Image (tube, rainbow, N blue to C red):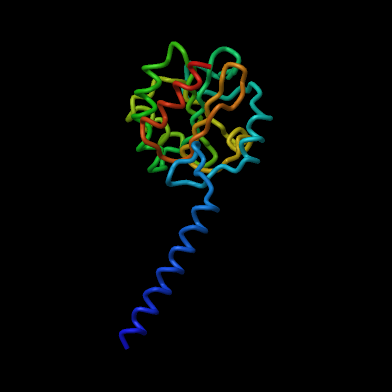
Length: 188
């Protein structure tokens, strides 16, 4: 009976060791641009974004401005796609507000509400509650969101001054990870 226990234990150890070696040899590194709570971006999505980072115009949430032109060539740019009902958007809003204040002289930040999936009054309350001062634009049909992959909320896309996607974060992320992306485009 003792020999049987030793043999089974030895066999389990060998199988475990083989499994660990196999997993380590075939592991894929987690993409830097993917947060923990959302779908990861595929290389095809990132390639699609690189091909579609043209300037665009959207209506502003602010009644003072009817439309806002987003020009990627002005300076590095961050696009934040969000909805007011998204818990992760609400979690990250103070982080983005803090970083936008810190980098506003070097980086353009635009909040883009996917209005087709939200209520305008709720969006106004969200902006007021989080003290958002950067421009909040309305993607009324969801076309711009879909153009950039439409993979989850919040979605942050970081563009250098040439309009190229330098980084992307989908889902909630630590402020350090978000700030690293801000620093990377600021220095490009």
